[in-house]
Length: 228
Image (tube, rainbow, N blue to C red; front, side, top):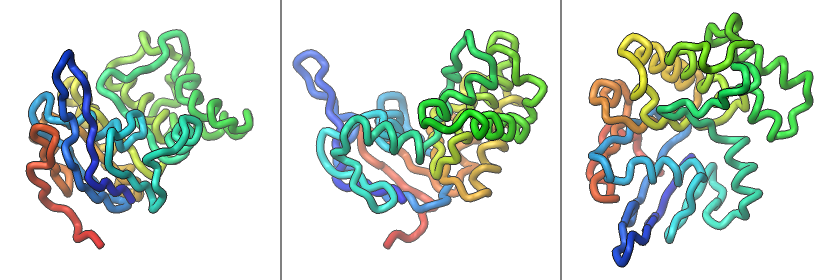
């Protein structure tokens, strides 16, 4: 489903070049559950951003579901991202002035989904995460765990094939974090490919596959399925 070949991502910092991704070759199969780990600055989030089409490679190629997306136009990148990929971040990234339901609805508005269909899908997503009674609450009226569940509802409302989670439990207490992890794992059991960047060893150990990044390279890759 996800294939990187000789992927490079370089950043200029003053007169130096930082190799955030350095000749990365990676295959992720449909429905996999993988944790991406490594020390700070190892390239974990850069890899996730490249997979999520939030950032372009400096060199190399990226195939998503067999399609070369390396050089898509900005409009095509945005469309592909909306249709195929859901994002869950450590700090939620909810719009403060909008209600939970309105936050969840945003990606559907951007995708030009018809209003009646939007309402049904928003209600379905919130209901599935136990948030039906919080639909009209704003983020500052919700607990951290509830805000992250709203973020997950927003990620799944477009019915993506892939969910990318960057430190999804990093801003939560242990109980709320476990709740969020179990929700994400449930989505994976339903067939969604799940990639999680984490510093949490216990969370990483729950994944079927563990990819460790060091200095922009894949240092180890354990539990991976055999690739064609």
